[in-house]
Image (cartoon, rainbow, N blue to C red; front, top):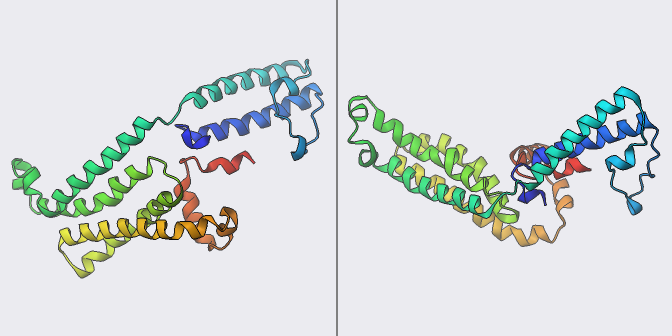
Amino acid sequence: GLDELLNPAKVVNLERDLYNLRNELATLTGATLPADDDSTSTPLTTALCDAGGGGESATALRTKITKKENDLSRERRAVFRGWLKNVFLGQALLSTGLSYVMATNPDALFGGFALYRNTANMDTSIQVLGFWWWWLFIVPSLRSRRPMGAEKKALDIAFLGTPAISLLSPVVTKDTGIIWFANLAVVAGAYGFAFLAGEEEDGGGGDDDDTKQPGWLKFVYKSLDFGSGRERGARQ
């Protein structure tokens, strides 16, 4: 399926382009296409759409179609491997440990560098970057694994929640360690909420649940989904 491909958005775009080009070729060559009936749907192949002839315009179309068919075949072989998901997971775990030290004790990492020692407020800048690491690297690394179901919803919530907590928490406290743990609490809470609510949502039927969401929230989720394999609706 699309979820296993390295670049699902490109596959969807290539399929759409081929569909349009084949229909155009059928018009030029006078090919008779089967009726568009879902009960007896026939794949729209190039052979079906090419009745021969058509002049130079049809020849140019055949060249375009051949190129896109080759591109599509190559993209379908580019599978999102399991080892790559493990790399992203390892990156997230490493970033978690690194960001904690950055937020709580940057001297342990950078104390030996003259630039760090001689630049005013460098320690504060690194501490702030430490708790922002949740939004910049940790959550994006986990989302890059393309999780599904409850975990995907949890990470979507975390991706929206961590910048909010990083922006608002300094109003309450200047302790960067506390803000780092506040981000951790947001991510953990997002997982807890998503997995606890998962059973109820799964029983409701995906598209019906979407209709209950406000328009702005559906737009946000679709924006987060872009490029992650959820563009499959474009095939319709």
